[in-house]
Image (cartoon, rainbow over all chains, first blue to last red; front, side):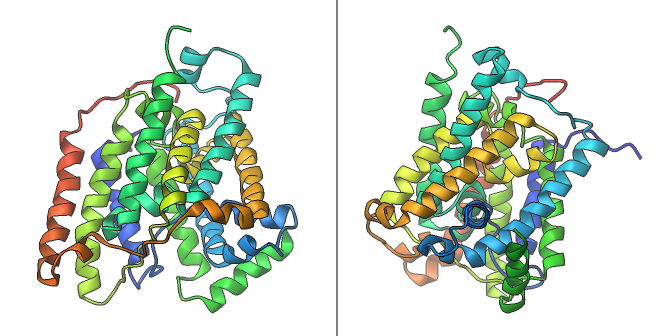
Length: 167
Length: 195
């Protein structure tokens, strides 16, 4: 049997559904799948902020998500080495080069800012693509629908203005 | 960091949300599917914000549509439960916009960023460091930030707006609509050989 190097959107969608359904079920974890609480949780240990109110609030979800993401890290590593063969220490994504040029420093600075914003934004909103979108929509959570709509606004405005072709 | 891991073990012992091994295994599959579908790449995520690549949104809509229906049935059978997040309106709107801006610039979200890190991307490592700083800043200033989070309108689900006898219809229509959307959104995709 030949293993395809890439899954199509519907193959990925069906497999993703199975994973989240299992996570929700009492046979799996009996809870929604989330990712972004893990980041402030790790931060609070890294920078010795355990005494802060928010650090204490993020312990339960954060600890659960750290384990999930350690698994995801390994899953990503194994798949990129053995299946997609995309593993490699790359500095700048191709599409970024095409739109924003070849400066590594510039990409790093924007990566830092982007990484800061997704975590800060996700914490303000109380969830990210996983918690609000992937797990929120299937619960018909109004918070997930609102998050999805305003996330799209942020995405498309940035996609239009930040990545304009003619500089 | 060592005390973090002992704390994690403790949390898993006191909570009933799967064993460490179960959750770690879920994580592995999560990473495999996302990586294998290539939706962790900058091209698919930032490309979506430029309306050049719809793979990610088609995948998410199909998955959420299927989960909507399956989850409802599981709740009926008593083998899963709903735990929707509250609508804390100010934080939700501002946070979602900030999140969208960051996601377009970085080309990752927290989950896909971690998976892409496993792929060896150095710019993602820098973004993860940015995220850890973001997490620390949020933690430190949380007491001040609370003021802009705004009113809490509760953990509302769509069916709460309708009489109880309509619930199953609403679930099936909503789930069906998501699946329908996943198919009607055009199959637009950027192709980069090495990504």
